[in-house]
Length: 483
Image 1 (cartoon, rainbow, N blue to C red):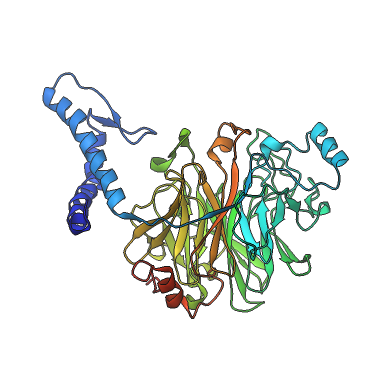
Image 2 (tube, rainbow, N blue to C red):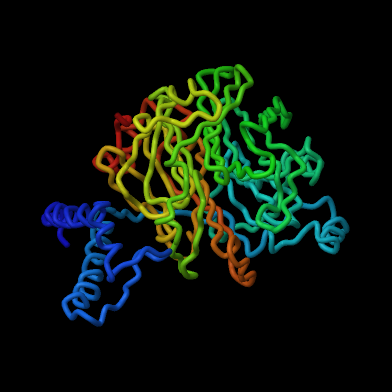
């Protein structure tokens, strides 16, 4: 459709969509013989007693669904940006002290390559940090890095470097609660400190998870590789037996005045940590729960059902004084936000008031990781579309930036460098979470990057408009903070 008729088409289709989405109307349809609520969007039931009802049941739903999908398409723009695959692995391997140790761990089952999946990513200097969460047994190191020289010419062939445990092999010991147990995500602040969330629990996708270690937060100085601080979460803040600490963002006014916000996807809560006071607490709200209507995620491998609460998280940038927190359950079609002033003044276990939570229109599709840049652009991975996009909160329009059905299956996590690049992992995680059906004759795990012209939300960008105009997006990007 040409751009001149797009606004009219959107207006018509949006009106129809509002009618479809109206709870009262949907409830009337759901009580009829035509529709019933299931795990699939709509299940059609035949009523042979009425030819008119058959017409409604079989002709109207496809029309409604077509119009609904058309709205999603016309409201999502697309630009084709070049991206680089920096690293690519068929299976994950590590830089062991020697081959004898590697063979011993393989024989004992302490290293099972099929259970190793890269997830989180952050960049600092020449190191690309990668997490390998201990979702199942046989993961020898949960926090790692690979060396990458960003000043070298563009890579023709992606590297398959073995992962190097960070900060050491000794710090990866399973069952040693002072060491790292289960790392899904981390963050690096503007002072060169890595904030590492450790769920404590391991093998959580098995029938017998190991809950012996408590959840904790660590601060590591990346210039010295020394642990600066360890905060063990109280049991009434984060459960030792049921948590899934998933993602973290950090806002620092200075080295001491820092607030960290952490998602707990299993217990559907938001955990807040005050560095200066060394205090943590959590809050809850219905928007942090999984939406049963959004549990089915379509992928190239088929439809997969997940019931997962609050997952991705992002913080408004420094120029806004980190004043708003964005979050999104994995099983949801909506994006939510809350002022950080509300969170910082909450009590442990408090339910947020509905008026404090902003809900954005049904959008995108299923996504997990979020990332905010220094000018307030929110990036995310689209699982069903094998792409990375960004969200402009002023017009609630998504723009797909990079897309590839092979390279970008399940874009999981994001990290910025200081040169204007956004890095991300793609790991085909749908093949692991449900069926563990990786084909190790193919490339399964990738680290990629593309140029966005901005740093992370941690930094104040005084040249953001200049960067965006050089990038050619001056009329597309959100240059003002959310209001």
